[in-house]
Length: 277
Image (cartoon, rainbow, N blue to C red; front, side, top):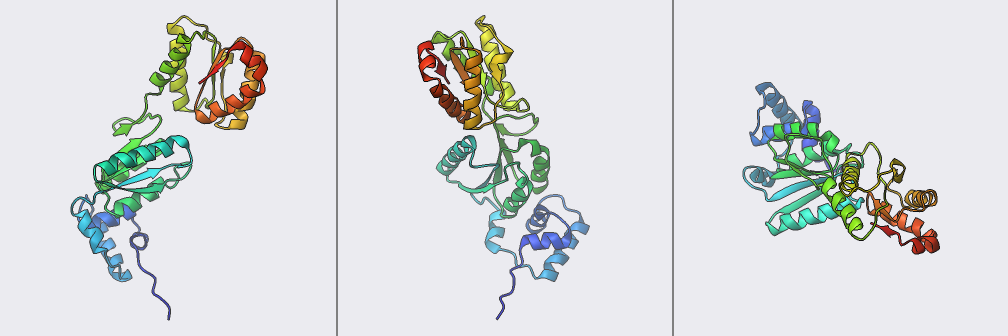
């Protein structure tokens, strides 16, 4: 005997020609939905025989205690640590985290947001894919769901945002190297299109100028977050500029690769007392 397919909120949205968040608003009675749209959604519900999840409905009426967390790519160390920290902080406040991934380029962010909104979460945190922020902000406003962004960098205004101070971080590390006696400090890693890199390089350059130290554009190298490419870039940098004594790296992947490149030049690097951060 064939088992009938369970009708979901996604099926209703498709049949009514609306988003999942719109169906969720009709079901909960929240938000600004036109009578025509509401009628179309209700007709789709009746035609498909959609049965509303009563437990979810009761949660929507108050606080569910669940926070949705959409991460662009968990395999990246930054977002893995961010997820761990956010989860720990929220659980200490008695919240449960509903974790999902939005795709490497954030291509599934909107879909994941609609799914979380339909589940009646109390709020959503977006980690990464800040370039899709305007679209997600509009969806959140439509669904009446609080939204917070957590990112390494951002050019968005009028959003609730948690982010590191990239410029200050680079300033502190550069100053640390200077206090250890280094005066010829290079930069390795990141792509020119990266806002995060721009802020960190800005902090590095500002600190060199503050202490009256030389800045050479050829000492600032772009590099993918790849250990192999970082190792090759590090080797080339030190061969062409043997007077460099310290290198500031874009992230831990680049730093690890740079260390391998430095290890390949172990004898000469050791004699010159180079430092890598």
